[in-house]
Amino acid sequence: MTSDPIRSIVSAKWPDMDTNWIKSVADVLADDCGAAGELADDCGAADVLADDCGAADVLADDCGAADVLADDCGAADVPADDCGAADVLADDCGAADVLADDCGAADVLADDCGAADVLADDCGAADVLADDCGDADVLADDCKTADVLAHDCGAADVEVAEVASYDW
Image (cartoon, rainbow, N blue to C red):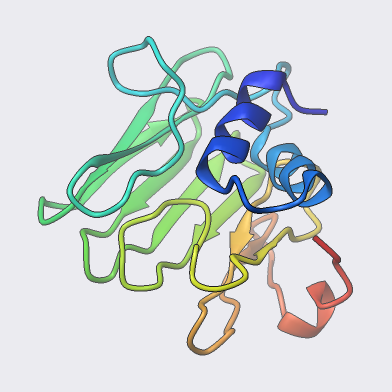
C-alpha cells in the first residue's frame, strides 16, 4: 500500500489519467522494504517523479538510507547503491533507460519515449506494467516497440505476455 505523497506525485504528473490508473502506478512505485518507499529529490525536501529532459530525475528509496539516483539530461551515467544491496544504473538522455534494483528484490526498468522520464513513459497511454516480484517492481514499456526487458526478482526475464493481463 502506498502513501498519499506518492499518489499525489503520480496524479500531478499525469493529471488526465483516471484515479484507478493513478492508484495502480502509485502502488507499484511504493517499495516494500520495511516501510513505504518514497520518491525524493536530492534536496531532501520535495517529492518528485522523473522530470523531463533538461531537469534532474531523482529516485530515492526509504529502506534505511535515502540513496538518490539523479539522471541529468546530457550528463554522465550515475551509478548508485540502493538500500545497501542494489546496483542502480542510469543512462543519460537519449537512451534514458534506468535500471534500479531495490532492496535486492525489486527490479525497476523504465524505458523512455524520447525524453528522460524515469519509472514511466508518457508516450500516448503511458502504460506502466508491474512484474511479479512482490509489490515494488515497476516496469514501463517502450512506446515504440512494446518490448519488455526486465528482471524478475533477479532470476528471470518478464515476457510481455505475462503482464499483458494487467489493466491499469
